[in-house]
Image (cartoon, rainbow, N blue to C red; front, side, top):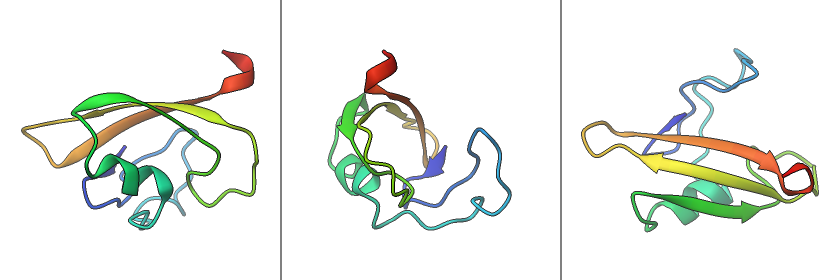
Amino acid sequence: MFTNEGVVIVRIPFNPQEVGQDLSKSPVVLRLKDAPQEGMLELQDFLGDKDTKTSLYIYRKFADYPVISIFARDIDVI
């Protein structure tokens, strides 16, 4: 989960170093700025990981709160 500006609130598995991380330049956050309230994206990189696997990201923006909830899974395991 992160703010509309792209700041990490929480991530699972939990890693305290990632809380507060600025993802505003992340491909996912940039694509979500003009995206509908909910949907899905296929991307290879989210938190700057060097992983080249494509993941499916399911997201929802909350109209009453400035946060975005997002869930990702490797395409290969879906």
